[in-house]
Amino acid sequence: MPVSADLIVINARILTMDAANPRAEAVALAGGRITAIGSDGDILALKGEETRIVDAGGASVLPGFIESHIHMFGGAEELGHLQLAGIDGFEALKASLLAHAAAHPDDALLTGHGAGYTMISEDEPLTRHHIDRIIADRPVVLVGADHHTSWANTKALDMAGILHGKAVNPGNEVVMGPDGLATGELRESEAMSPVLHLGGPNRTHLGIETGGEPNPAPTATEWEADKAIMRRGLAHAAKHGITSFHNMDGNFYQLQLLAALEEDGTITVRGQVPYHFKKPMTLADLEKASEMDRRYRSDWVSSGMVKVFMDGVLESGTAFLVEPYADRPDWHGEPYFSNEEFSELATEIDRRGLQIAVHAIGDGAVRRVLNGYEAAQKANGSRDSRHRIEHVELITEEDMPRFAELGVIASMQPPHPPGGMCFPLEPTLSRIGEKRRYLAYAWRRIKETGAALAFSSDWPVSPIDPIAGIQAAVTRTVWQEGDPDHSVSLHDAIAAYTIGSAYAEFGEDRKGMLKLGYLADLVILDSDIEAVSPERIGKIRPKMTICGGRITYEI
Image 1 (cartoon, helix red, strand yellow):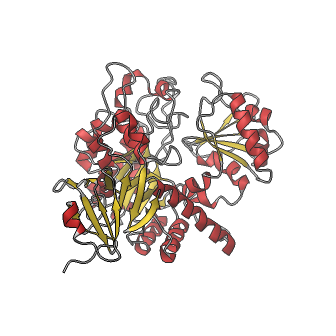
Image 2 (tube, one colour):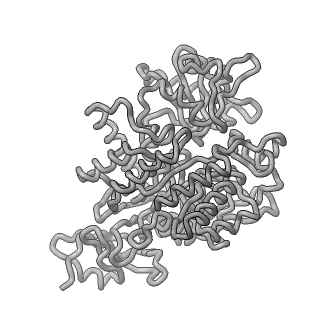
Image 3 (cartoon, helix red, strand yellow):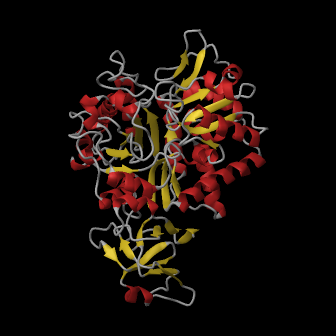
């Protein structure tokens, strides 16, 4: 006798993302799984006395979105900071910063997020002097939208002990002025961390700054406060239809927080958290990554991945390129690892049976990572490793087919191309130059080689909203006539946020599709996503998010 459903969704335009059964009208959920999918009549036969019926009103129902590149803990904390996206010009910055300072008189560090490289103007870079003219007697830091650059005032630089500079590893820089003092621009985490830590222990950013654990350990009060921050981030994700995320920074602490939420029943989004390998860690330190993998393997909280950075970003000139920057013919950028270092690292991680995810934005960084993955295959033998490259904002023609050949996943972000959803054209286009522009953010080209593609936002670098990301992917336009069209179809964009991202975490056997026996993770939209014009896709909102059969968000 069929089991009664806990919840039934009817009158829906269901896109299952299952090629064997691509469309349906209704779906039944019980025990955290999908127990039936089909017509309204067939599914309503499973109604019991306690079954909740949800009428989708002819709107789309999709598998829950899987955010394949996100910084959950840090992003959750930043929800309470000054938001600078869309702020242009000195006067607008002044008004926003003064209002924030007045509202937060006791903050040890005034922090803004989302600052643009051309915030003051396209010709005048932001410096400490601009911020000093607004606030000079309290430490201030403005973090770039990409989180790879920040700008601090003189007070903050002095308190952090870096006004006169700081020795840092390649790829990081405290930018110095002709007066022998720091200009205020800080590139990458080693340069930024001394200022950011003026605000306190900064436990939310340990996973990306050091990959280490809180020291000293948080008090009971701090632990509960951190759990609340994590819950807030998960709720923000669920509101946008997200049912799973792949964190791209990590430590034991974040896993412990998520596991505590799983234990008390308040977890609302499934999370994968990696071990973050950074210099001066050694290969022996990878035992911690293996231990994280052994301890956390539930459907709600898991690890099994090592995250690595190979370079920085194009905007600040810290991405590593094969050919020099178009606007700096003497500069390629600096990779964080030599070919030999990364090949040795990738081989050891791969030998442990762990997945690797590497931030590589420049084409030189992408090539170096592909070389390391190839070396690991030669040393350890080929296996279904599904190693990943995150961002791939530039690639060479020679390296284009290597993703498919090596089984490497391209993890890319539709909101990121300049002039599109989030970021201005400059300085990125001038950095890339006309010669290689056609190979920038080349989602379609990479997919056409047969490579696996996963989409994401990189929140809080860009808005977390997958629906906005789908619109960005579908409506992508060329920068200049003659450039290739890198947009993708609506179906392919949805797939990259669902089954593509499930594949990226070895989860395609239980999530990413709406299919009998799969996890009951789905999102009900307020409209038919196939019926609206591409330019209006971003206006569609989730009406209900369901994760593990539980309603995690409802209008």
